[in-house]
Length: 349
Image 1 (cartoon, rainbow, N blue to C red):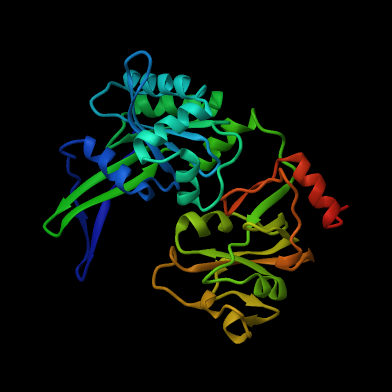
Image 2 (tube, rainbow, N blue to C red):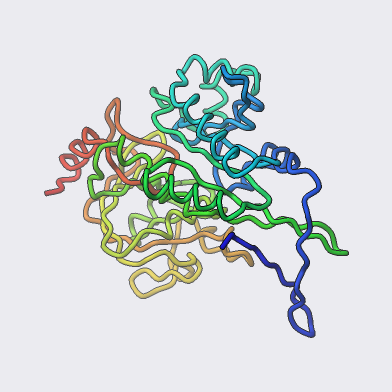
């Protein structure tokens, strides 16, 4: 059965279904996504639009993720199931060999600056030395038929092809136009299956960004046993996936690794989080803004409990040239050189 999104308006007399409308031009999706990448729930830097391939075909939108891997966004438009999937696979076959020089040339045309400069401005970190170590293929559609869903799911689940689809359902009422979004498959699981054949095995440890700034402070985290993230689902969402018992190494941007510990409590709203039997609001925090409650849980700060087994101050952070670090709030630590270094520095047996 093909995916179908429904929407109800909440009123005093109960729920009233909102009728689905036909998007007049699917090219509008391309414009919306290009103007606001958050629509797809991914933090990406667009480096190309309508990129011409050697066979004359075009890539609707081409982007880089936080690890400098390419992401192809392909609109379904009026293509048949076989055509849209074949086009996406053709794009993947083309971009998998893209070199740094080709990526840089695209960025110069699309962003007006070298890719390294555009990357640092967007993600706040220097671009990794190696680019395009993996890639993703994302179909954008206002609807997708059963055949297309079946093919995409088969490629991703049975053959670890990094392909997925995002549905944008269009609604129109007297109050205005509305757009709903849903993924065909969990995007993290699809990407994890795709890169597992290329990357080193998982070490069993998680990399977690401390994210020190206007709403959180490492001294508070270290003293009271927690880590936090917030300001949007792309920040707090990964933190919420950590489970009790997970082992983590905490990294502070542009400094190095500052903590090793074990998750003791899954993530909850920071305003509800308790440390040593007391809510954070009752503690003397260096950064009290962490407990500022917002009406939207997606924008609030979330905290996960950590039993710190060894920590260092920010000035004692542990780092070496070539160590692993990226923009992800949480990711699996796979770089064996970094793991060996951290186990020694944090005295992990």
